[in-house]
Image 1 (cartoon, one colour):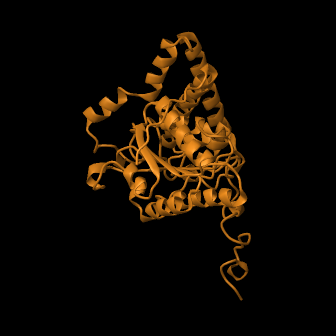
Image 2 (cartoon, rainbow, N blue to C red; image 1 turned 30 degrees about the vertical axis):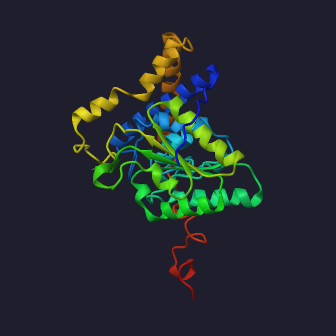
Image 3 (cartoon, rainbow, N blue to C red; image 1 turned 60 degrees about the vertical axis):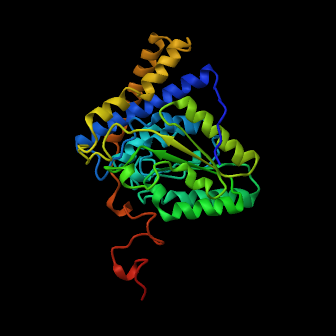
Length: 341
């Protein structure tokens, strides 16, 4: 079962806010790349450069109290939800002032105050958590919509099919968003999936589903707005596949030599920031001077976030395991949570 989503055009202030959010994500992640190359970010760093329309279009269509989960590529979701850029950058650098106290890092951002329930390093791991959030909403009699964003690679995980089944069986208020960037790490989708369209998998469980251009922020907004309406007003789950493209490798450790140069150039010609800027200019919503001023303001925000993070203290050694074990960490194994007398 497929569905064609109606347009859900924001007003001019909303359009400007969406463009600002997309630009902030792009500039923030470019600076994060620099911080990683300078050795100030350890571990993994997965960038969503190129996917800003999918992220901002989604968040702009939701209510602030709609619970949202994502993958390990989730800096953009946190920024779009309104998390402090300073706290996010500090988290990437492993500093005590970070969003999660410096102990989560790039892949595990969470901001419960903004109903962002996290990025997760386990592929597909956030999908059943979003299902649980949807069940909790139904149980409590609320009208929030649980939204989970995951990639086409995660769609091959068995737990996703299980979640489709439970959502369809129980009519849970959840929206499944498959962000199909066409590569699982360096493996093209045609080598990993028998069928290259993923939204029909949800339709098999009697879930309304369809596919939209994930590089068009207004198309994404319209599709997600309709999916959220189905979940909120009709208490029916929905699934939207967003076809997009990331301009960097899978992570900063990926040299990105697998994808053809011609292919990358073709998708760069559809850069969501550039195409949306043309819309704003063409419709007289912003002029070149206003855009330049906005970009300069965002550059200042990102520079301030980086300076704040670099000047922030590292996590004290005795706090590194806080929140991991049931009891506070104790160097004496006889008193740890894992060893009983």
